[in-house]
Amino acid sequence: MLTCKELTELVTDYLEGRLPLGRNLSFRLHVMMCRNCREYLREMKIIVRTLGALPPDPIPPEISDQLLVVFRNWKSSPRSA
Image 1 (spheres, rainbow, N blue to C red):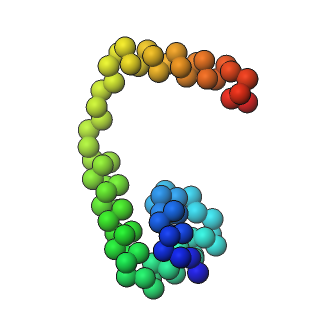
Image 2 (image 1 turned 135 degrees about the vertical axis):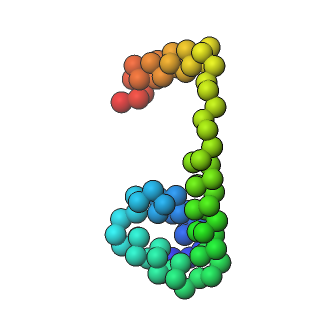
């Protein structure tokens, strides 16, 4: 069974549906047995839902241009392979 610390490290993958079946079952079992982790999971779901409802801040054009340059340079660098 997972420890509480392990559960907190996996909560994002769990919420995004990225845990393999065995880990997912271990996660759910722990949550069923641990009141503190049940509360933690509930709080994380509230946070995700709340942040997801916020409108995105527009990116200023000059920042967008800088990000595009950095991204293009990163994609063409030999280290990105």
